[in-house]
Amino acid sequence: MAKKAEHTIEILLVVLAIGLLMRSPITTPPLIVTQLAHQLGVSTESLGLLTTLPLVMFLLFSNFAAIPLAKLGVKPAMGLILLLLLVGSGLRLIITLPTLFLGTILIGISIAHLNVFMPAFIKAYFPLKIALYTTLYSFTMNLGSAGFNLLTAPATHLWGWPSILTILAGVALLVFAFWLVVSRHLPEKMKATPTDHTQPTPKGPSLWTNPHAWLFLLTFGCQSVLNYTIAAWFPVLMSYHHLSADHVGFIIAIYSLVGVPVYVVTPHLLTQLGPTRLRRLIAGAGICGIVAGSMLFFQNTASFSFWLLENLLVGIAVSFFFIYTTTMFGLKTAKPLITARLSGMAQAGGYFMAALGPSLYGWAYHLDPTGTPQNIVYIILIIGAIAGALGIQRLTRIQ
Image (cartoon, rainbow, N blue to C red):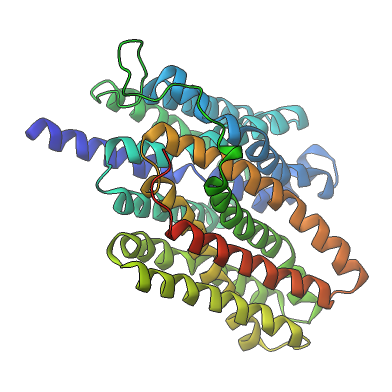
């Protein structure tokens, strides 16, 4: 019993540690992009790829991220991916364009795999506590991103802007070393062997032909389009309406932070509420999104309160549908490897949709910044997320 409790604490620490690396290596470097551009003697716009490349890697690799789990097992696969993330972080300490881009590509590949690994990891080691541990790593993911964002300004002031890249690489090194120590004592939960026919094999029926799996893709994809488009264009839109830079920065911070309580509360509710109340919860989040979308038809205002409420409502909706889908990956699948395959399939399709969102919105924005078509598309995306979430709620487990 004592050994089992020890394993529980170790795995909990692993979940929290990896959560710190799930977003911060992507969200922090854009805060020092001006200094990077000056150091390299290039335009700031030319470094926009530092933000785009990870999303492209999510798109390209998410669908295949379950393969290392199936072939190697969770312990070697997790170690390999954390090593890859460490190498990418180390390359970014060499301030040249090739090393920055290559390091960012490796980090994007690593996080694409971690996005898929973590729901399966939790399903394998905590099948009866999926909601709790999904809450913990999602909370740590947001906390890590926000923490590094807050650390950037004082660290840059005290030690110079390269210190941020050094700190990110140092955290990646510590997490990798911690995994090496802890994983030696953990039981392997996912490795398939020739004599173990209870474990799923690397190959299986394609989830792309499973209509139930497409419900996950629909929900995850709709919220991804909204999230990445809002992150890219809402600051521009608010500036167009003459909000001050301080107000824009504060509102965007609120948009990010509103997800924290949503991430904490939602997974627990998903395991406790009956079907009727769960449908009401989905409807409530959807209504927040629809109200926010409807407000955009009356957006010609520089009112701080208007845009704060707009971002609060859409932040609640986007955060809910993200954590809802992430939690349901584990709750609605029979085995950890199926969890990983479903997560990979939904994220690959979702990030493909997300990659289109900012560019299409940008095209519409340049035609008419307050145009009706983009507002209608926004509401359609919210309705799509609601429909997908309600469909997922009615499913039995995907085998």
